[in-house]
Length: 420
Length: 78
Image 1 (cartoon, one colour):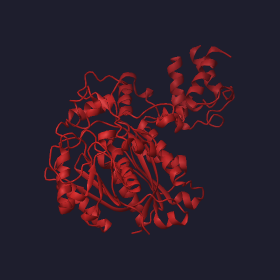
Image 2 (tube, each protein chain N blue to C red; image 1 turned 90 degrees about the vertical axis):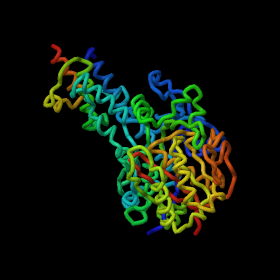
Image 3 (cartoon, rainbow over the protein chains, first blue to last red; image 1 turned 135 degrees about the horizontal axis):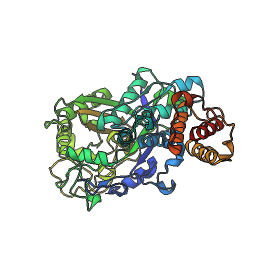
Image 4 (cartoon, rainbow over the protein chains, first blue to last red; image 1 turned 135 degrees about the vertical axis):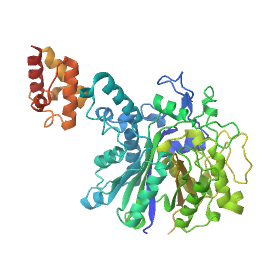
C-alpha cells in the first residue's frame, strides 16, 4: 500500500478553538469540565459536561459565525458546524485548496459522528407531535444525517473524491482516520479530510447515557474532579463535544508539493468484542487483538511503542484496557507512557478518536506526553507510566491511539515520526 | 409598503440572510436572493406560520417572488 502522512490538523475542543491552543492548554493541565447551565439538569443524575468555550472567537473561544453563516447554521445540528470549523482549519493548516478538476477529484472526505443530530431529532419529533407534519422543516433530514458533515465539507471546499462517513460510536474518529488512510493507500484518493465530530451535550443525551450507567454522577459539585481515568474514585465519563479533523495525504503527493508533514499513519487495527452492547469483554481480548493488528500493519513490535493515548474513559473499563496494554507490551511496559486526555476534555464520543490521534501527532512532534489529570490514587499497580497530573517530556517516535465503542467495536491507530 | 409586505420582507431577510435593499417586490427567491428549493419550502412554511394561512403545494409552486407571496397572502386574508 502507498504510504500516508498527516499534513494538516484542525480541532474544536472543550479546551479551545484550534489545535495549538487546545494542545497548549492540555499540556498546561487545564480541565474543561463544568456544570451545565444551558438547559435543565436538576432532575438528571449527571449535571456536568465539557462544553466548547463559546465566545467571540478571540483567545481560543469558538464563535460558530466564524465558520458558517448564521442562516446556514439554523439548518444543521451543531456537529456539522464543528466539522465545518475543524475541516477549514485542517485544510488551511495543510495549505491544500484544490482548484483544478484533477485535485478536487483526488480529494475525499471521511468524517463520522457517533450519534449525529440527536437534539434536532428530538425537536423534530416534538414539532411533529404538537404541530403536525406540515410544520417540519425541509432541513430536518439533511441537518441531522451523520454523513452530512462530510457532505457539507465537500460542498464548501469542492472536494469531489470519495465521500464517506463512519458511525461506530466512540471508535468513530479512529475508524474514520484509519479507513480514510486505507483509501489513500489503495489509490482511491490522494488526499482525505478525515475525522470525527460530535455535539451530544443535551438533556436527552445526558439522560440516555446516564440511564446506561456510563456517566459520572458523584462529582456534580466538583466537576473538575469528575473525569479521573484509572483513579479509585472514578465513576463514569464526562460528556464532551467538538471535532477533530486531519488532512491525510499520500506521501509522494505531500513531498511533491512541499507540504509540512506531521507524522505518518503506519498502522490501523480493528476488532469486535462480540460480547456485550455497552461493556467491553472483561479479558480485554478485543482491545488486545486490535492493538496487535495495528502493530502488525505497521510492521512494528510492541517494544517500538513510546506513547499510548488510551481510550481511558474514567469508567470501570479503564482497567480492562490497561490489562490488554500490559499483555501487549510485556517487559516493555516500563518504557511506555500512557495517558487519557479525556481527563481534561471529557469524552467526545465520535470525535474522541480523531482529537486524540491529533494529540498523538503533537506528542510525537514535541516529544511530550500529555497528562492524565486527577490520577490521585491509581486503582491498579502498573509499570506503565500513566503520566499523572503533569505532562512529561520524553522521546516519542511511535504513538498508539486506542478507541473502543458501544457494540464492542475497537480501533487502534499507530502513528510514527516521519522519516524518509 | 403594506403591512403584509413588510412582514413578508422581514421573514425573507431572516431566513435567507440577505440585505434588506435586495428584497424588492420583483425579487425572485431563487434567482435574485440565493435560495434553493428547500429554502423556498421553508419560506412558505414561515409565511403560513406568520399569517395563519394555508398555502397548498400547487400554490406554493407559483410563488416565485416576494411580490407573489404578498399577493397570495393578501388574497388569502381578504
